[in-house]
Length: 299
Image (tube, rainbow, N blue to C red; front, side, top):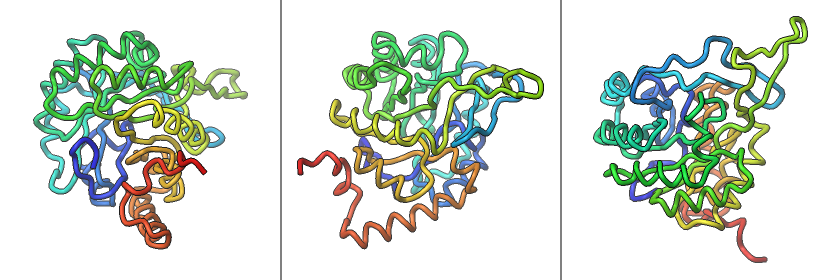
């Protein structure tokens, strides 16, 4: 249970991968995810950056897609076709002003169970993404505007690219956020093609995802768990059930999986679910609730 929304398991699709259309999200749900988060979308269509937008690096992926999307009117048609029975659908939205976030919330809340605010993309164009989530005042203003417009729970997705993520988290909680997901991609990072002496990505730099960022994500979840009283959703480098258990022990109630799908396929959800269930049986845990935040116990 997160903010009164029931998940059949703690695994979700993270925003950005396979979240652009209903058919791929339905496939993810049939493959064992308890919920899906859409690719981030805005009020109006946005082209994003030209290719190349992704490149493999040691320990993960760099991406600078630039938040490309067809706009809310087109995305609503996809949302209508997602199989919602026993599944949780979360819309990821972004904008440049409080009014844009409020309008998006009003437009889509009838088609989803929760809304995630992308205030943390490290390669968004100026005025979007991390430029909001790195500023307490902007974060408070955006979260407050979205919450005021919403009848469904609001999740704030945070960037690790800040001096103190707990301050941003407390600000979002104070503004009315019902939950926090962390972290978005790390960076920006860069890969250079040594044959032509140029950055590989069109945008030159991009956000890092994948196995290499998991320890940072775990640390951020651990710190924020001690700073706020609202539920946390862990994101970053999750490939195995052991990874999920780490996030839960650090304080997350659920997790989101993205880059692992590129390496392991959609089968990763069922594989993790089976491993997690076996682990819980062997250790005597009857629910996720019993496991959340156990790494904070005084010894």
